[in-house]
Image (cartoon, rainbow, N blue to C red; front, side, top):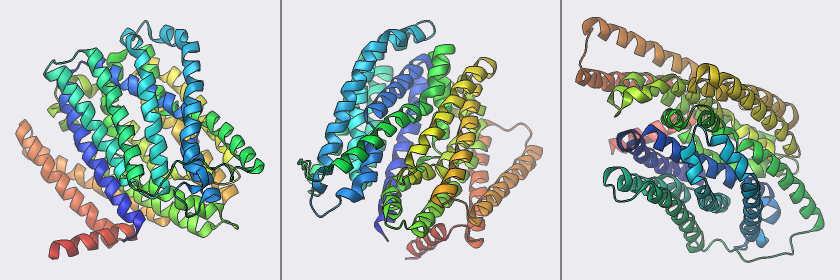
Length: 507
């Protein structure tokens, strides 16, 4: 098994362990011991810190991958590349720290009326953002080494465990106050960044020793232009994932943000498999497209393979979530309150499915001479999202925020993929994706028929019966879907994994 497959599988396993922890935390700890307003506060704090850190990063994660072929050699410091990944984000943090204090008054004014609790803790976004910033830097360095499993485990498992401890100390055991909970947030992300750094240093494959010889005037000019582009692009791209939360907090209040956060977390499970695979494949796409001449055949093959597999896995997850969504909210503590986000789940999950399948196209464009044009698309994405959020949230509430996210993403991916095909010459589409849609339709129809039949036999089932029926029904549709994928050869990669699994079982 190649390093891509090994690291991707390990990273995905770590991610799903984190999902299990996050699942328990979100749906049984938060909903039981925190109010929806407190949940909204934690969500907006993290969103604001994520936005801050993404801007302060100055595009280092992307530029590291783009310029890696220029620095690549056999030395541990890659001719000073790793040193620059430390310095540039720190400069970015100082710049945006200044912006934070300049615009702090406007931030307070926007949230004071409907979300005063956020205003009380807004200053804590700074240390959280700093630690998030360097977690991203060290993860980018690990990506170059094609070692993403441990950093993924730190982000997905360690961080979630740390936050879970904080929630228990605050909500269940009442050992700390809300102030203490926010401090736990800061400490957890700080330790996460430190663990990532220790992992890199102990690997003995990396050095942060400076080396200025490789920085030629031409490379410096190219880097500065690319960084200037990335700063602007990050300003747009980083706003997008948090835009609806900010609009809902400002227009409706943190209570509704909490409901939206729970729905968004459920939807996020659709995109989880894409995180590790995208991270490990991106350097190889970068090398293929930066070759002279560009190796379009390799880039397209990787692009289509990633898109197909992530569409397949993401669609199956989306369907399994949706066919059990009513039961889920019935089981969830205070589920009647959070069931208001039912349709938000479906809308956001569909949006995340699009991202899982096609976001790699934006990465591919970033490694070509046409990288700067992606700014146009992200600007269109942000403007359309702002307009839709501003228009739809007052009309449709939190569902309006979800529709704004989906609508703006549909426009974005249509334009982006068309341009990538036109200028770069690569595309994600294949006949296998039609088969994926057919398998999805088969699962939905089969589930509908089972539910219809059971409903006629047991018109008023108990909760225990519904849970048992859901387990059996989900198992049936999953097996049928798996068999359809295998015998129709939807994805050769998935078929190989299935055969390997059967061989392991047979031993």
